[in-house]
Image 1 (cartoon, rainbow, N blue to C red):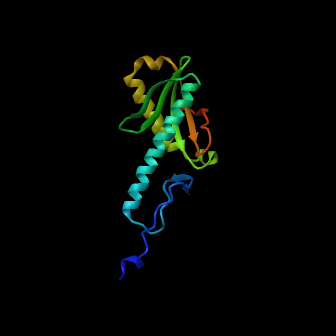
Image 2 (image 1 turned 45 degrees about the horizontal axis):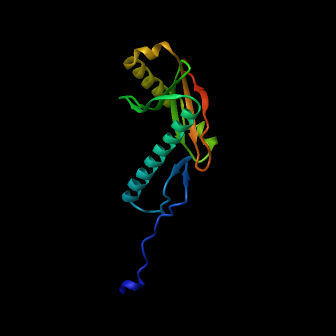
Image 3 (image 1 turned 120 degrees about the horizontal axis):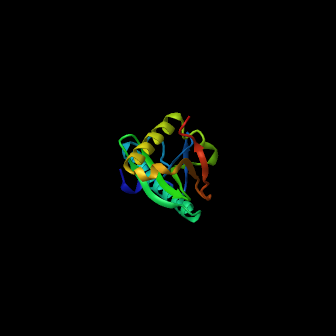
Amino acid sequence: MNPSNRKPPPQPQANRICVAGGQIRLPCAPEGEGRERDDAQRRVAFRFGLSAKSRAAALLIAKGYRILARRFRTPLDKIDIVARRRGVLVFVEVKARASFDSVAEAIGNRQQRRIIAAAELWLAGHPDDAMHDIRFDIVPVVPGRLPRHLLAAFDASA
């Protein structure tokens, strides 16, 4: 076969956003590509998530919050952002989604319980913070839009 007659491999469309089940998948991949494409998509999605967390942190700082920790990991789960403002300790979950509407279903009861358990581990390691009021917020981040800050998105007593 003449090399000039071969078609070049399909290239991902870097500026196109793919949405599957309310979750953002970057870059879009042609159907039927293998594991290498999945790994590349995971890496890009991870970077997109880090960017979303940075945008959320910037929003919180602009609103007067002091960021105490980012990506706090525990054996149970992780907390995206731990912040404090005016005596209120806030555990923030950042969700990068294609639309603001899909955020509500992104954090179910099971994930809420895991975040609450991770927050309890934070408090065990930072006993001074246990004296503060505590709140669980969500910051949804959508491409091309400013992030929103949903105060008291869920309750630990539920």
